[in-house]
Length: 252
Ligand code: MN
Image (cartoon, rainbow, N blue to C red; front, top):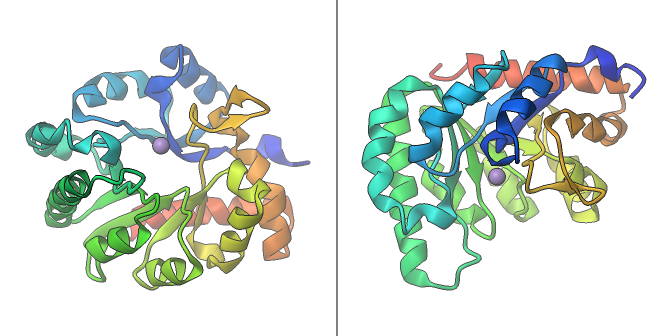
């Protein structure tokens, strides 16, 4: 992007604590004026991650319990409840139906349901939510009256599921893998421009076989600009506005 130096790259879903040197990554993010949400996969790593991201203004520590860990760490929901008042940001949470085990899926739903009800009670939380092969159940669990903001991260559901999520007020964080793939592009074309944020899901997302860095969300801008019929600079501005809206209007 010609104007990329002017954008403060937004990574709305990044596992800062899982990079080889998280402290260094946070400092690099600060140097590049990156912002975003540092998700975690289990409550016991939240306090450590919160300290780490202190090195980067605008990087928010999120309290999470990843669906793929939900069954073995279900007991940590108590720690989740204790820590929740320390942050407005929650993630990574959600459902993952890659497992064929119906008992594990049920346990995931119980944990996610509990998290949603704690967040609903708080009324002002911003959630980064995983929904692989489980979009219908995730959207149903969130419902139409959830008091908070839900960002569906790396959404890969159907167009119908996307429309239902959108009708319920969900946002989407899209990454360079999605903007480069046919299926991701088809979904992004159906997203309302006002609901789109950027993410990397680093270090899990790899770009040219290297774990993606949060500032590489800039790679999403050419496709977004193309779909929205605007300049890359305008696309960046729109993502910024969406991120601000995702925070400010929670609870209203
Ligand atoms: Mn993730």
